Length: 228
Length: 228
DNA sequence: GAAACACTGTTTGTATGCAAGTATACAGTC
DNA sequence: GACTGTATACTTGCATACAAACAGTGTTTC
Image (cartoon, rainbow over all chains, first blue to last red; front, side):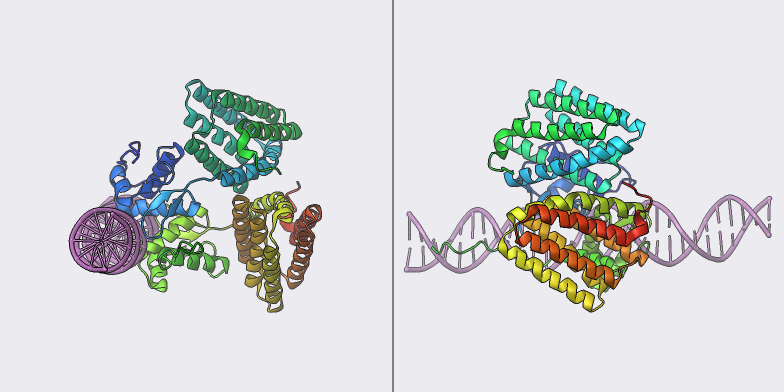
């Protein structure tokens, strides 16, 4: 069981359900709760220093989201992301992100560029600190901010959720999240940001497509059987 | 040992949580629970003849999905779908569906065409019976089946969720869901299905784009300020 | 008459209790 | 020794109980 789940001691403004949801999801996305590991409501409740009820509600949400699953009658477990699902979600994002970035170039407000730049710096700092989890989180934030700038919450949600799961896959397989890969990713993000700041939709889209292709190459054999 | 024996995965009798989730969501999508109408847990529980606990869990999921919202401490309510959100989700689907239909043309199995045809018949029967809710549901199923055939669960989820909400908008505004519109939609769906059966990705994609544009025209003024 | 205050009733949010179901261990049987 | 049947402990799923928060109302005070 994850030692990282901290007990919460807040009075009721943030509902315990939300706290539990955030804590469990965070533990999963940090790779501290491994796929197939059984989740026991009572244990989680004890760790968080709350009762089972809000934990159950959080787990219900996570189950509905597909991050955790319920075995017949006995227990919940962290869902395994399969290679097929990984590819599927990667492809989905490949299809959606050029659209979003194009619109972001047209509609973004200037302060949103500042947020993007700050996120990028955070990603760079994470790489410098060899903090893979931090890098992945910052990258997700980067893509989320682009979606927000594009003004499409529905597609932004999709992209972020997919990335959460693809990151889960990478973490769970110990798949190559190498420094060189993170550095390259940051460089490509920086290029995309510059295109956005120039308000150049086509360049931003082109760079986004390049970014995805470049990731494909770096992830290599994951896609070997998926020629489309 | 008979190798044909499959592991039985009968999840124990449908959990009340799932029943409540389906019932509440269905009521919303049938337009029987109007936007901004307050939802009282106790009332729902009494109606469903269960206790508040599973109702709460269902509501937590629906809240997380964004179909219902919570006013600070006091009460839940059906979310209003704004015109902006409607357009946003419509545009998202416009971007995603050509991609899905192209892949469906390539990867669909033959029996999936039969399912699509059956769904189309259901949609036609609903139109004949002046059953707008039934028509909308069948249309969503049609699009969902295309997503399934395309083999991309993530994008399929997005499309279906968006359509649920756009339908909510149409129902709540009493917006033109005219017989002529439903008939035209069915005709376009039929054409898309034929292209799929011919395994013609480009035609299917073209018809899908036409379908969306045609919907735009029929929904007319909804998009008047959204020139993209 | 208006404003501030307290009270009450309703509803949420959380905790706890209890029954049902499954897996595991263990004993019994061939 | 392997297999079958049974008991037990653990965990879920639902119900109920309790506490806190907020809305509305009535009352008191100036």
